[in-house]
Image (cartoon, rainbow, N blue to C red; front, side, top):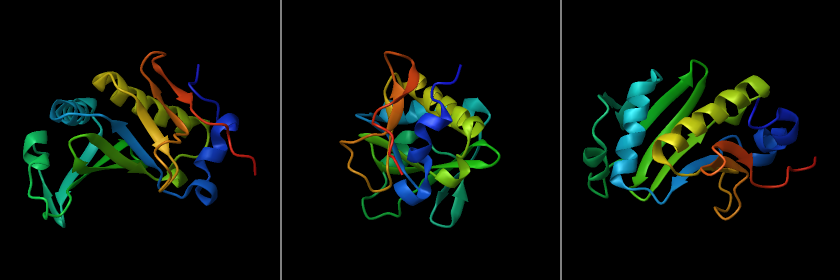
Length: 162
């Protein structure tokens, strides 16, 4: 059974309402959490590409990438949970794992199920919630997220009516 039903959450996946690149994050993380996330990407079979600016490099250890000088360009890790869905992780801080997805790639029940599976894999590996907010939205108002206690992705806000 699906964690969420498309008809119940489709307003949260409408790029015109939410912005096309919602913020997804794991709050209150540590260097060990970042490394666990990188290990998950490596073990999952998901295609990925790490880059610093225009330079593509092998995926480093979390400690190496997160100890870069503050004025260094922010590296990113592009992860494709499926061939046509991209999540871009940015290494802004140790305390929060931050990534974007493109809502235009997450339309319909099948894509929603895949996305919920991706959030669940991350949340289970880290034992932490994974939450999605509208693009540039207040981090006090998540819309959906992986809930550790229920071990599934749940609705965290009332769907928008259009």
